[in-house]
Image 1 (tube, one colour):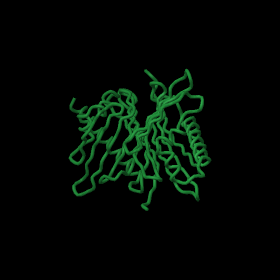
Image 2: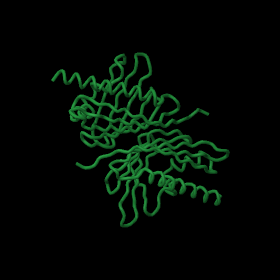
Image 3: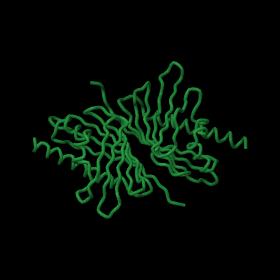
Image 4: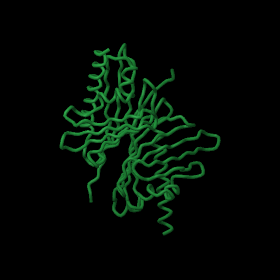
Length: 154
Length: 157
């Protein structure tokens, strides 16, 4: 019998952006805008349907390394305020976590305070929850960088 | 501006049943067996439980007190290990309003001739309609109903 385990973990990350909530929300709601900060040569989004019950699917990985897959489903969307989604991650086709993600967008002066909370279950010892927190932080750093470039170009 | 809020909370229900793992798992995975216990309190109008038990399958049930709001449960199954684990996410609606999104992990382990279940819910409770304490109480009630259903099965056998 294989070793089975399920470890729950939760974390919240906060970021402040100079862009207003409507613009930051759009970075999650619009496929092409999302691709600009969330995707690169090693990560591509193949499905994006931004409505409750809609799917988002992406995958990738460095050459010669395992292929990671993200399979998500939108649950709750409040325009410019909140997104709640459920998702699983897999490595080489083997599921290793299932999570609920909550993104909240709050006005912060003329900008936005974004809170990302992940509540996840990590399966069968395949992944350390601390690495997930780190990876999520990197994603938001990429968003911040794109918004900064936009502000400079404007 | 409408007040919006999210409260994130986790609770655990840890119970032991006097039935073997295969029977407890069947009560959680077979649509006919699950409909016998996965229902609202007796006072609620008859509800229509549906379960498509497979990864990616859906489960739903609705009900409510006569004349009161209708509670809708809608789940998607993400992970199944037969006789060991079921992981799903589910939403609750009160009438048209979505009040929560939760991750639910059910683990089953043999305990002597019985079964220990550990159910962990990690919930996002939306806009103050419900809270973890009430949800935990309601969930414990459901697991009481599972115990009663298992006992009735044993008595009938």
